[in-house]
Image (cartoon, rainbow, N blue to C red):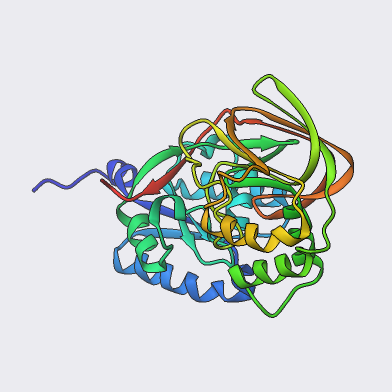
Length: 309
């Protein structure tokens, strides 16, 4: 059998760039990296690791350098939803075409539940090896990109509480702990929401604008969301009496709340929110503050590896 020229061997070779967050899952993600690199070595796949830091521009520089020196054919993102959020905001213009595999190794791993069910680590490694890339919608809010979802009101208050008052819990239990802390004391404020050509002002408990179905490790706030339909699912919950909040919470957790008269649920391709003052909000679970939010589609898709049909 004739030898394949060196140039063509280099072109055909599979090269995996690992975007790794060593601090995900409270530092336990280093064990995930060991499993990932061991698997790639066993499969004979050339790989390189890019360690993340909090600064977007610094990550973009690292990715650009790795692309120029290593010429990857794919990227594996090792971490949780926050790591994926950091990744898409750091991704250089010339790398958006590369297939991306999401390896769930953080405290919040909700996005991949849209195409894997339970995000078992070994199952996601198999998808990373053998899955087929599918174009997934990416959105922008106030010049920040997101792929999972946006929340403000009660949801923003919960994320703020998680950031400033950490608990011993992680993942779903951590989110649930902070929900219970604030469920009966949170007070609604009047929000103005514009979507699909309509503008309405109302006392608002929370607004979720989502590309994905699940938040907080298990709350199915937007259960009808589809990550590939070019639409956002919006769940706007109006004023909720204190005595009904516990029951509503259980219904939201299971995604059984859409019939409730206290909310509006619809799809849109653009959403504008105006608040009476600066308030905490989250984008893919990352905390930020503002009083106006404009959410619209981003021009590019992220090509995420999913199970092959």
